[in-house]
Amino acid sequence: MRSDVIKKGVPAAPNRSLLYALGYTKEEIERPLIGVVCSYNEIVPGHMNLDKIAEAVKAGIRAAGGTPVEFPAIAVCDGIAMGHTGMKYSLVTRDLIADSTEAMVMAHQFDGLVMIPNCDKNVPGLLMAAARVNIPTIFVSGGPMLAGTLNDGRRTCLSHMFEAVGAHYAGKLDDAGLEEYEQNACPTCGSCSGMYTANSMNCLTEAIGMGLKGNGTIPAVYSARLRLAKHAGMQIMELVAKNICPRDIMTPAAFHNAETVDMALGCSTNTMLHLPAIAHECGLDLSFDMANEISEKTPNLCHLAPAGFTYMEDLERAGGVYAVMKELADAGLLDTSVMTCTGNTMGENIKDAVNRDPEIIRPVDDPFTKTGGIAVLKGNLAPDGCVVKQSAVAPEMMVHEGPARVFNSEDDAIAAIYDGKITAGDIVIIRYEGPKGGPGMREMLNPTSAIAGMGLDKSVALITDGRFSGATRGASIGHVSPEAASGGPIGLVEEGDIIAINIPEHSIELKVSDEELTNRKEKWVCPEPRIKTGYLARYAKYVSSADKGAILS
Image (cartoon, rainbow, N blue to C red; front, side, top):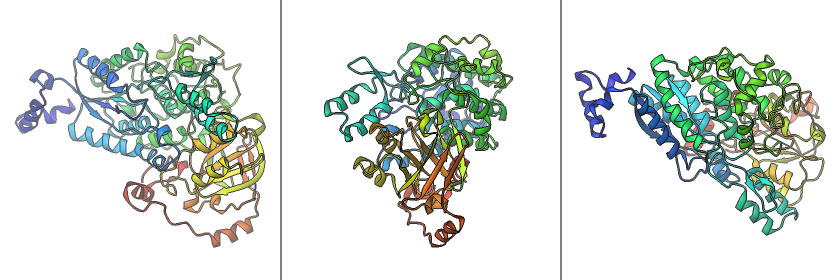
């Protein structure tokens, strides 16, 4: 066993003495030591139940003959961090999580790992760590939140809550109406109930083969989630016995499958940051351009919030991620020969999957759209690309041209939106919010929700070198690369410049001559960094561009 280095022989006697100090018996020490990486905390609604998940995982490990050893991982609630300096600390935790988990695993020589994440950066951070240490590992998330219900019976969720703020500023919703959303949008523990980033990544963990059936969709409050956790604890023992490791599972074909499922589900644009970063830890290069290649042949089968009015509990009822994969596999869009954490191939896993509700999971021959949920756009405004969740864009905004309204921070932009200074036809530019310029690449749910809540989502676009929440809808185009702080063309845009967006043709153009852009570039001076000390300053020094996954070099 890998853990023999701290358990066997005379040289390991001091190590054993410390294991005895923890209360472990000789019998427990002789069994495989399984690290249980639990992201429980008391500030993230998606993580408040993870102590119960961890206990179930540990029960499963013990039942299968292993010794569970729990240690923590941090997690940020993007919703609580939204709209203030705290959001600068969200994306950066992905690397802190990966680094600290690597340190714990290598220091203590575990034989296997069960990762228990749930929310936005916690999932990819732990997947990165799993790929990096490459010992047998399985994931079980905390599960999604149930949708809320308003007084009139309409279901609701966090994205509606943020849009309600915009409606309130526009005079379309009174104080009592706003409070009704506050009290009902988030009714249970779990990752917020739409196809936002957390649920996107938990579903893709299942699709890439690192989580058992239901990992992405069984609601947090269902007892089935505890049974799933016990089975994950049991299954890690089989993975250890067979020495099936993350890089045996997360192969190029598996990443291709994950992006295909991503397109079919209509996942968050943040997956375009996280999948390349996870692939990088596997020693693979996941091209930004591959997204369009896959999208062109992958139909969008699901319209969960914010794209539509269905929620994760509906996807679970309809058959979950396995049912989506079965639709795609039957159409020849997946490589079903890939290995998974079940010890079986994807094909073996999904052979009996059934789509129980073709309105929730559309058949391949009757999709919501013939192309996938995400598109990468390129042009002189974003030479290295930018990303839009096209499945959540109104048809009238798929092609749009308008004047730029330029802001050098999210704070300035949101103030202008709330003050009614943005009008139909405008294209809001928010720059110096990228990985390096932010620093930290803030998620901008507040401005996009304000635009939607004010009824402007069908007439106003937003373009940024920052990023968006999975809860964002509308013509919201993020990850513009190169970013402004790196000298990208988005830093050269001036108030009133005309910008042309054509999502079906994957193009984004700043209608300014090359000669004029050259003149502007010669005069351009990068603003002073907003933050010059601490972790964010170090992060800004080493982070790559968004099109490379914002990885640290």
